[in-house]
Amino acid sequence: MDVLNSRVIQQVEKSGLDYFHFTEKEQEGIGFGKRFSNAIQKVFKKGYDQVICVGNDTPQLSCDHLLRAADSLNHGKAVNGPSLDGGFYLMGIHASSFDAISFENLPWQTAHLATSYMELLERQSQSVDVLEHLHDLDHEDDIQQLFKGKDLRWHLAQLILETLTFKSITFSLEFSNTESVPLESPLNKGSPISIAA
Image 1 (spheres, rainbow, N blue to C red):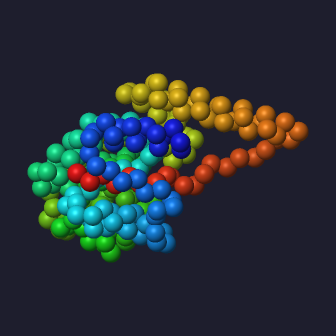
Image 2 (cartoon, rainbow, N blue to C red):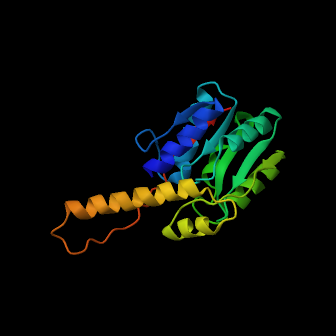
Image 3 (tube, rainbow, N blue to C red):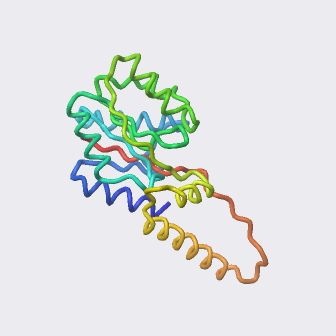
């Protein structure tokens, strides 16, 4: 997660857009949708009229995606960056069309999220620019799928695997008296980053 967080923040900083990183400490509310909604509302309360939100689990996210989203917002459109699993890796929205209750009621962390978000925007008669579909990493299998992708960023995938291997080696060295230690994948998908565009 540290590697993915660093990379996303690097791409955001490269874009030159203002940004706010909401870690678990800054998030408020019960449930993913409520915490996400509260983070967006905090940015709007700072006086920004449009927000781009990205997570940390899409290694193929680039500065170009962020700049294209900002351009779409500047032309009055909302933005959806759909992930291949049915969610989204990027969302761009205007303060004038943000309805917190409808947003919180979206089917978060399901394969229906991107479609439901598009339906919400259609009900609001909001024009939408849809970015390319990208892989996100929710499970170990997702890393394997990323390796099979046509436009794989090999150096990033290698960096992720090296990091996982290093952490695994460090963990087993610290517990050398233990024959085997079962590990579970963390359920936290990471902290959303809101970018004021």
